[in-house]
Length: 423
Image 1 (cartoon, rainbow, N blue to C red):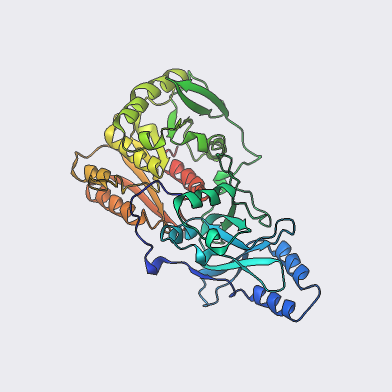
Image 2 (spheres, rainbow, N blue to C red):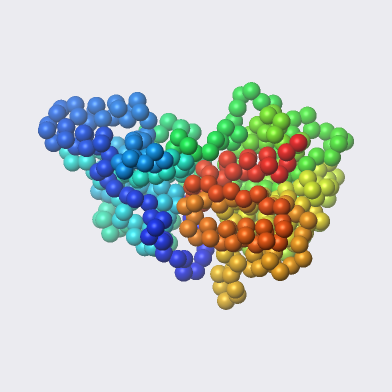
């Protein structure tokens, strides 16, 4: 739940703050009233309701707007590990206030006389976000420390919602998985989940020039068949073993939404911020070493117009840079939540946007998406889109109601691949 490093991030604009309250839920009010009245089964009746309704609780908007809901996150006290404070970490919603140095609005409230911790957010009906809880037994001051080191410790120990019955979002680096909030109008993500009715491709782990990669081959792949399309995915160690992106490719192939495509997942090998920062040597390695190898071994990557490079955050920046730097090999770029503010140092920011503005127009197509909740990236992505349109680029642009979050990106990746590599 972290953004790439950036100096002096802007404070969240007041008009974009999510409305937060801990007692607006009618269900919670009923629980509190019953507990205060001494009803012996008040809390157990509440948990039975949660078990039937599902968590988090989704109730009508208290302001009467059809396109909003009141979403209440609830946590049951663990008698073996009683907490003094609990943070609800809703991806990007919480990050806004963390960057502003104030986590207090995200402390859950314990309903008096019960073991129920709760907090409510008023959210649009198309919102999607991963979330976790972090319970502590210390002081309030310790619980809401917002410095970077403290925040990392929170992320290292935060836990999913055991009452959420949806499939969790896996994490890496030994961290716990997250639960996923999906409101009724959130974009469909059926392409992103494993299905039992599709033929499976094969995934192979190997190395190229000392770099770990994984190759996902479509069902029935034959190296001597007609040339295949190619998708190069950055941050491959996340998309492969953690998120199982092969399921997305298999679903798209099964549904006829994707050309026969070989996917190559590039492991960052601990060099993410070096390679994914408009690095010409890295992009040239992709173009001059990796792609010829893929073409020779798997019959893909010869045609730039059928070769897409895809990335998120710094990877989204690099995907767009690869299309600009080497349009002879990458005719398609899929950028999700691209860090187009880069660089944030003594040089002028939004460097790549200026290259597209003033450089010779490249024969490339770009698919760009960003989240409404990404206050650090939204304006920059819109400016990048505007420059592409002004220069006559073929650009497909969309915004989703979510944040810097693989829970959102996995659906967007499927949509972008289907748009760029349609049969």
